[in-house]
Length: 225
Ligand code: CTP
Ligand code: CA
Image (cartoon, rainbow, N blue to C red; front, side, top):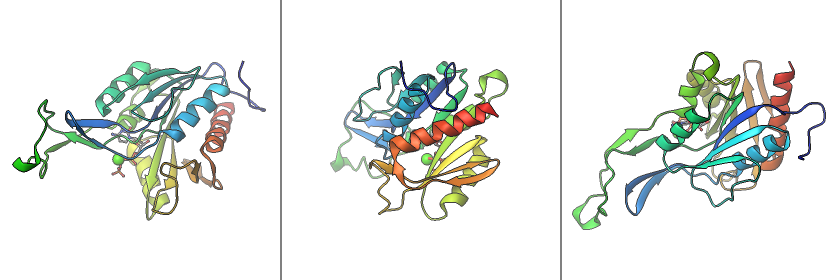
């Protein structure tokens, strides 16, 4: 069995987690993507599993191995990620860690685009579905009891993140500063602020594994209320 947290756990809870980037193909050799190692999402999947939850991890392409003891669904594009998430519902908690590509090329071609024809200088794009927003705005039992988004921001990090929480309709948003020099992107550490209806809590810098365990303890507490 897995280790359980003191003071409560997540046994019997179902949790959906998205992680990693999505890749939006343009032609057989090129794609559009956001930067994401997947480390924070995979750490969360492991921490939720260790707390006794039944975890579905929907992940875009990463260099990481699927964690043991979780249901793993590997996807490539935002639309595949959305479909996998909708199929995993209903769940008690949804944690949307993925760095979903905001746009995809309007047309995907089986033919390699050639530079000399100028084919890469203007690529028509179309917006991808917003998975967090559509799950947050679901009604009835399809909406998870607790929906948690992530917001990697620069500049007014807390302001942008709180605006995002309200705009998307999620319950919590986990904000982090990804300005150059903060070392979060791709690294093993993270400094987060958790924004909820009840205000904000900033945690000191810690490993992504410890961030995951800290979030799990907040989730446990939310269900104990
Ligand atoms: N998200 C999602 N689907 C998308 C875009 C984002 O589920 N198509 C989720 C992310 O997983 C994250 C949260 O929404 O939990 C915030 O993502 P972010 O990229 O910061 O938000 P955007 O609305 O895309 O805003 P921005 O213009 O800052 O990129
Ligand atoms: Ca985005």
